[in-house]
Image (cartoon, rainbow, N blue to C red; front, side, top):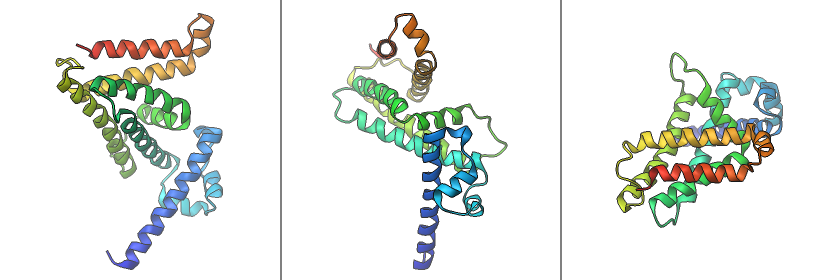
Length: 211
């Protein structure tokens, strides 16, 4: 690639990042349903037409946010598992990291939840493919911890396909976080603090993995 082409690509990447930054800021402030492409353009200090050069529509822009959210999640998982003595300890740390991620970055959690709930399109578009690849990398992080646990004996050897196990753990954890967010008031009325609910759920998940 020539120097001029490299500069042009750098400029395109910078503009794209500015648009995603603007969309993320609005997402965190008002929620995705209230965000418009006009607002994104104004926040990024770009023309509306230029925003559409980079993203076909609001849904396409949302995918860019999902990719960023998933990359951040993977980084948090990697940091959480670092330095742990056993594989099962890594898995537990990842579980707590996911709970913290949902609490500290609710717009990222919401972005991922919307992505998982969306209906598949006829063909996979580039931004959608990027999200799928980012999601795969997140699960590979969990798989590495599961494999380590099986190897060091802290996780039972009969868990089956570790990638499928990772998906099951994610489904369980995702549901727990969503229930805690939507039913916390009801749980408090019934005398169940949200933290106790999280403690119980993570302990229950770990018991299914231990020998």
